[in-house]
Amino acid sequence: AKARGRSGWCFFEAGMDERLAGSLRIETALRQAVAQGELLLHYQPIYCARTGRLTKAEALLRWESPQLGWVSPGRFIPVAEESSLILEVGAWVLEEAIRQVAQWRAQGWDAPVVSINVSARQFAHPGFEALLHTLLQRHGLPPRAIELELTETLLASDQEDLPALLHRLHGAGVGLSLDDFGTGYSSLSYLARFHLNTVKIDRSFVMNLQEDSRNHSLVRAIISMAHSLHLQVVAEGVESALQRAILQAEGCDYLQGYLLGRPMPAEQLHARPLALTEA
Ligand code: C2E
Ligand code: CA
Ligand code: CA
Ligand code: CA
Image (cartoon, rainbow, N blue to C red; front, side, top):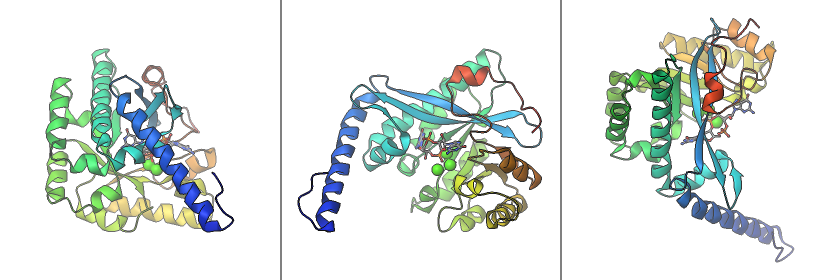
């Protein structure tokens, strides 16, 4: 940052300018990314905690820009969400994930259910539901083959027909998952209000999970509450054998994290063993 003065205020302003300039560069480069084939999906395995079977995988966006190199989704997704670019990017993700599952099935693989991250603005777009069904039909995939990962921000929107839309998707068989559970303000009320199948316990709770920790009590409470509402629970960010063991002991349904597998290209996921070995 260019220092224009000694006061903290000026440094702060310079930092803002730089961040804004960075975002503009990202936005400009991202405009061509879909058309130029610069996006791809990686898949992170999600295992059944009880049987160890590979039952789901999360599709995670990757972008290599000729101008900027690899840019992480944590950086460029928020930029895309600021503009209507997220619609184009989101539609690409949806079709690519659906195409990939269809291809796996055509290859004779009983592929895991793929969960797809959906941004609030994308979901609020009036064409979203029709697009989803068009893509499923185009690739001959039943709705049960995929799952949508929704955020609290999305559920908090004042989208008029939100409960009805979720109800229809749920009824059609599309899995609905609440991502980053526990990080927002009103997670609890959403669980009761909407038709969901799964909650994903945020990594921040799993991170400090150990015997007798407060997080342990919290995770136990989340799992029991979710189960009493007939929701399944995925724990994200599982990095250690101890975390895995605690989550299994607490009856968590699915495990996702670097301990079990990083996000990887589609071919690598297909080549994975169908089940984990015992912890
Ligand atoms: P998320 O949906 O919470 O995805 C999980 C993130 O945690 C991923 O980061 C994943 O690589 C990372 N992760 C998984 N296991 C572990 C672990 O054991 N330890 C640690 N430290 N990290 C782990 P990634 O791929 O960088 O994605 C970041 C975020 O970008 C995602 O967070 C999601 O909010 C967003 N995102 C990614 N792909 C898409 C997409 O296709 N559409 C939308 N709308 N958002 C996306
Ligand atoms: Ca997610
Ligand atoms: Ca998450
Ligand atoms: Ca997250």
